[in-house]
Amino acid sequence: MNRDDIVIVSGVRTPFSKFGGALKEIHSTDLGVIVIKESLQRAGLNGEDLDELYYGMCDQAEAALYDNVNGRQALLRAGLPNNLVSLTIDRACCSSLCAVDLGRRAILLGEADTCMAVGAENMSNTPLLISRHRWGIGMQPLLVQDYLNPITYREYTPLGRDAGEIAMEYDISREEQDKWAMGSHQKWAAADKAGRFNDELVSVEIPQRKGDPVIFNKDELPRPDTNMDALSKLKTIYGSPSVTAGNAPGLDAGAAAVIIMRRSQAEEKGVEPLATIVSTASGASEPRRMAELPGFVIQKALKKADLTVDDLDIIEVNEAFAAVTLVATKILAEREETKWRKILEKTNPNGGAIAIGHPVGASGARILMNLMYELKRRGGGYGVCGICGGLAQGDAMVIRVD
Image 1 (tube, rainbow, N blue to C red):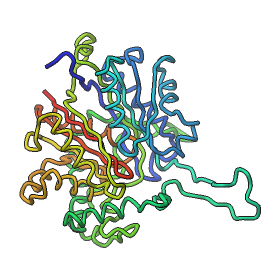
Image 2 (cartoon, rainbow, N blue to C red):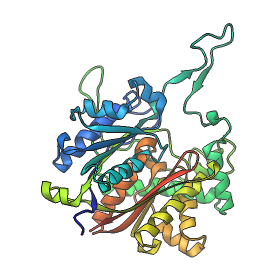
Image 3 (cartoon, one colour):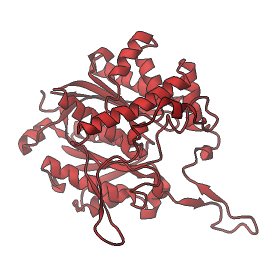
Image 4 (cartoon, helix red, strand yellow):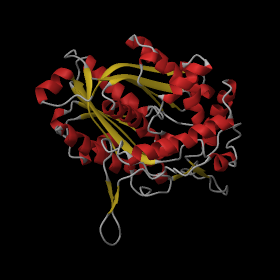
């Protein structure tokens, strides 16, 4: 253990809410405030202990409801110091894992000793957009756009179509994707029953017009009774050969926060390190090949750490679609069928975004903290998490729990 190691000392998230669900009217910044406060409390720290805060958020239409710069607004409303530097970032679904890495870099450069990374999103709260009407367009009809509709990527094809087509290139069938989706729900149910999410969850109080607030304390999306017969009957979406609403995540809401610092700082402040960040990697590719990115950036991160996939105890690949997780792990297996099946056995042991949800700005931090707590429950070891982002971006992080 090196005193200059970058260690994680806190990781919390709200339960994730489904589209139109329990959190539908709460701005994501309000969810960010909750995890900011809770992550500090659990680590025994206060706002003065932080040097920088990085805040991942992708849904800029919803951000605008609070006049943007949501990272700055969240930290001020959480009672953190006025002089705390923050940065709101958008690297699509990678944003909050990227936020952790930006904090890591600041610490390595000697610009900071302790940083917080936050991710927050509420896709249910996204407004519709009225476009091209500020200066008037005569008698033309009012044009209203849905910000969440991927067809509005214009020159780019929808992500579900891309993921399905790439899966076909890797000989991953629709049935295989449905099977993985069903397993995600089943693994979540087993993990929930065993209390494996307790370490990472913080409840959300939802105000009511009358009476006491509702306490939202459990992921809302999972459907443990999902079965192959029901999944097989679903139609594919956006022209995809294999992606359906059943083997894809929802449009969800939630927030997550992670605190990192130098090991020497943790020792001085009496804070327990939960995990050590060993290496990180980022990458990008041809836009339609997004499904490959987690596999490629995980390989890159493992090479930096001088590790192989065989050294890993757990792998977390965000289930942007079942196709993404299956393609990424097949890349890690170098397309060897037997090796691929072994890798799948240690991938997403507690389920993934298909069951839990995918509030895009928060998902990177979620997979990191779930990886960390699961390694801790198992007595330690090495793990890696990888995530893709729209138009083929990717981030990965290798951690060790002692």
